[in-house]
Image 1 (cartoon, one colour):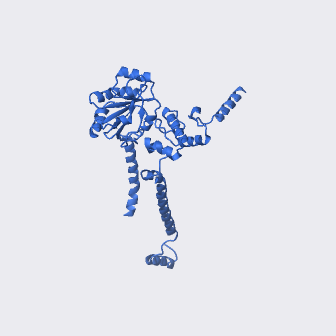
Image 2 (image 1 turned 135 degrees about the horizontal axis):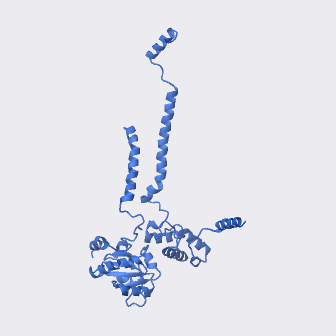
Length: 181
Length: 161
C-alpha cells in the first residue's frame, strides 16, 4: 500500500504544480494590485483647506461624520485616468444621488480650477492635499482612487485606479447598496 | 594609443560610478545617525507605485514622499519599528519587502526547509535500500538441497558433459 502511494506521489506533486501555475495564469488575480489595508477601518483623520480660489469649506474627516454613505474620490488634473473616470463620478453623484467628496491630490490650484470648470464639478466639497500627506494616510498608491464610506465613517471598499466601463454598475453601486446607500 | 587611453578612461569611469541613489541631497537629515536609520528603513519599504523596488532607490514621487515621512517621524522620536508599523497600518504588510513571520506566511518561510527535509528523508530511504541491495547481491543465498544434489552429481561424474 505504502509503496503504491510512493509511486503515485510524484504525479500528484506534478499535477499540483500544474494546477498552481494554471491558477496563476488564468484566474482574475492581479499580482500587481496593491492590497487594501484600510478596508473596515475608520476614515483617517484629516483637515484639508479648499482648493485655492474656490469657494467652499475644504474637507475634513469631522465634517464627514454625518451618518451618510458616501464616496471619497482622490483626483488630480494632471492625471489622465482621472479624466477618464470623471464622467462616471459625475453620474454617480448626479444620477444616483450619492454624495461624492473630492481630495485634490498634489495639484496646482489654477489647474484644478480649470479642470473642474471644463469637465464640471460633481463634488459636494473638495479638499486640497498639496503635500499628498492625507493621501498617504488613505494608503494611496496612485491617483485616482475612490473610497466607499458607510454611515459609521468606516471605509468599506477601496477602488484602486479609475472607475471606468462596467465598474460603476457592476461593482460600486452594488457595494453602496450593500453598505446602505 | 588613442584607443588604449579611451579604453582606460572607460574602465575608470565604470570603476568610479558607484550605485545610483534616488535620495536627493535636500532630503537628507543633518543628524547622521538618524539619516542612517532612515536609509535602513527605506531599503525595506516597497515602493507601491513601482512595486518591486525599495523606496530608497525609487524615483517615484510617492517614494520621495514616503522617504520624507520616514525622516519626519524619526526626528519626532519614533523607533524603527514604530515607523514601519505606521506604514503597515496604511499599506498593509505588502509595503514591507521582507514579509513578516506569521501564521499566513509560515509556508513561505519554512517551505524551503520542509522541502529539504522531505528530500533528505527520501534520499536516506533510497540510500539505505540501495546499500541493503548491494549486500544481498554480495552474499548469495545458500544453495537449496536440490541444487546441492545437482552439484554433487556433477562432481561425482568428474565434470559436466
